[in-house]
Length: 470
Ligand code: SAH
Image (cartoon, rainbow, N blue to C red):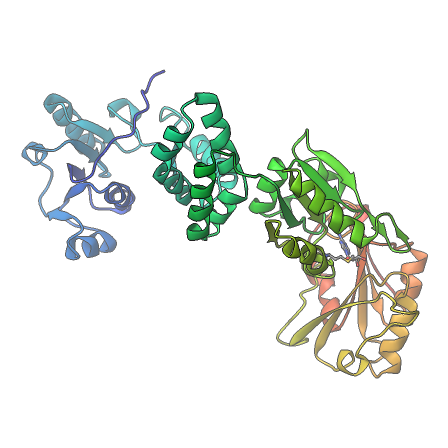
């Protein structure tokens, strides 16, 4: 271990920063965030540093560096662009027993600054001994995605109850178990979502009862259109904490691989005419599992509140007072649009976009055709593969030109993505001849023409052919 990691209490401690440029500015921000009493020695200051000095956040010495400036300092940072000056600062600080850091010069430094994830009071610091700082920054970026933004709030919340919990659970093991149920369960979600008052009441109740917090909760999570890179951080974190996952056909296998390995997986899929589990049974199953104390992940393709029956699924939970959370996902229309190069709105071609379902209710497609056939708009049809011919015909019958551009995007955003482009009159035939099957979206409107120019995804691969009629 070449560097010994410590966290330093700098509040109101005199610190000297030598240098007034951009690098110094970054250092100044960090030192001020830690509450240091900061003096900056530099003949000239970058504009932002000058503003900080004007606001009285730091003291500016408008002189060149001189060793006397170190008098009384606890810590020094050399951040000028002159290596000789920096080394002089280091030597002078060393001679006075002052901790010193030279920017980009680990050898001359007594201490180095790590890459930091700040969820105060929780701090994570990553360092590479100054040798490969980029690597430390990359590790930090990965950790950032794993540690929720609300974690600091949770840490502060926890610290308020430290003594009370210790008194109620004198035994180390039971105390650890108690904290685990608190920090991973719905109580923690309450804190991180900002409902601290409710969390406090609940926490006091738990401590008084000497009982572990219940962990059972349901997370209705949008998994996006299929490409794992398009998950949200929140979705990924919940996938890694789940005890049980309920999923259906739209959730790509690549996504399921990201769910915690020992989580139980339950397929509740609904192929269109082949209901594997009726909706009521799914609702009831979620209630039962949550009541058993399980963290239930209800994983949905796309966004749970866009043609996902998400509203119905959580209504039962709300009635039974089961804690639940809804996590939005990228809906397939957004995914398909981006990955097929078809902007849904465009200043010249479409001022609005409408999402509809092509699914038949009682044997007919019941849509507001008058509204849908107005010009200058894009219509995206979900669940419309099997009714594509009827749909396209209805568009024409109700007044959109037969030559209006129309496309179908199958398995959007995934390696299997295929796009076929044509017109309202040619699209059904193209879909049939290319065997376009569910899941696919139909996009109707002038914006479809832009795909020629804007498609970028897997352009060079045959698997993502864009087919146009001649
Ligand atoms: N909640 C989902 C939609 C569920 S309805 C969402 O927000 O995307 C199911 C329909 O979504 C499918 O019939 C298909 O039209 C569309 N769909 C879902 N994933 C898709 C994908 N990767 N590519 C194309 N269409 C998709």
